[in-house]
Length: 425
Image (cartoon, rainbow, N blue to C red; front, side, top):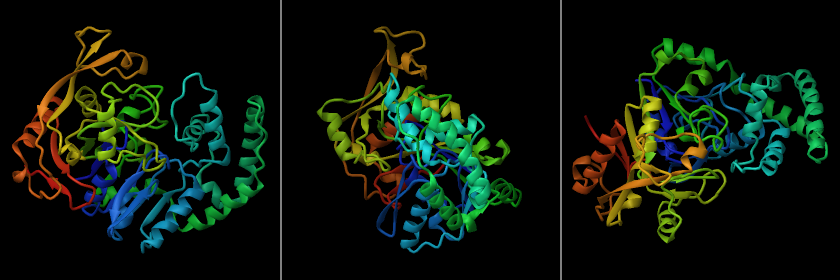
């Protein structure tokens, strides 16, 4: 079955592990949105590897790994990531890069800094130019990967854009950017990437018609979706299921199954409301136990209890069929585990207490109502079969399933690929 893998929280749910675990069962793995602000952590031959733009299918030489047209690409970063992958012994002959993927240009990272520093309200971006690159797409002034393969065209287009952005920098009191060195390096990156550049929409459509099995690899999380997330504290792309179709050029008919990824607790990076956040010593302990530091930036993540109101919202928005619950082992030593089952709004339990308000202003007004569940206080990392799980684990999973409205199919009980429990029908 063609499967979409999506994050159900604010990102960092462990999608890298989940996708790596599943990728060997598919003929094609494709990234469809986001940029190198994402970081999927996987373990390959005992080594920790962080992927930023490369799809997890690169670890399987018989699997086609596709960077589709909905992904924004910083070519220098991608070249470095490919070289790092080759040092692991991967050839990457199976990598395809969309000629229509928008470029993150030298201006964009600087713009990200300028805009973030000038906002009345910090968003907490990674300052890697993702937002400004997507702004150029919507503003109809973007350059694309295919432009890198035609020097005259690339130089002409970026010169026009430079004039526009240097006027903008001047308005903020910043000096104009000198581009010649950047242009040269971008063109060199284009030559390096040339063997991989193709029409990925055609490639994916041909794969679908040939009945090849496709895995769609999402980045970030549903609660960061530009339209359905906690606006304005969101990313700049559609991280929900809608991004699959605009990002690849495939029809919704190409999707057979939606797999949502959630931690057994919750985390968030950057600014924005986080109702179940734990700001005390226990929160710091949970952060350490879960090694909650960003794969891309190294920033410490904010941590909290699992928010079932938010989880159900993400399940419903994406039409999730099954859940992959990660990092369950992080809770091993806790005598009691809490989950949020409702919200109080302005100190009162409203009639809509089980509804997730997306916009930040509304979400900042809520206080979570918790249900306490018994912990299992047993190490799960060595367990291989669902039937060997402690009864308290099963009770925890049943409670989540009933509230969220989706079945838990996979459990992550450690960082290694093998530390995954698949729950049969």
